[in-house]
Length: 249
Image (cartoon, rainbow, N blue to C red):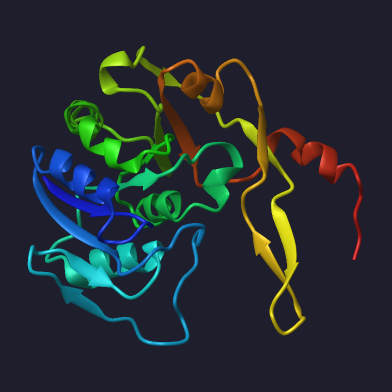
């Protein structure tokens, strides 16, 4: 099995090393990752300057672009043959609810799905990222089960979130839906030394809501969350309602 591993935290991230280690038990791993932190880059592409890659001493391919760039280069240029599956992560931080719209980790898996490669995004919801190393055995078993599925859902990627507990204390695994999260006080306004205003996005308080089967509830209760994400964002339930608006040009 040919396996592509990537992420959005950069090629030196602990999570990527753990993911590649777990994946290496399943097949031949090629790591193609950004040369720097690329969190919250979503599906952005580098279109206005050329991309370059280099190989590190331990064999990783490092790209001066986004996670999406990494997948496109890996599939179309850097790998001798397209991968059989793509693993993205392990992200340093959660990717639940609306986070999937911003996440470079999820976007990398999404791009692989667009290119016809089955893909799985993995994120760790805790704050002690060095502890991701303890998940190696659990990840090996979980990714092995998912990679050996006879048929992967069409136009679908799997978004996995690991709870912030020791692997031995995980209560199990749940198939979940996306919750909804809201940030408050996430925009900071301040004044720089020259007296000009600047703004900083991030931080603040987070509140969650969602159904009983939502991803954040599974994480809160100590379960691994696996959410299937579909590329088709169409809200089919209200198509007829919108048609009833009789919109005209």
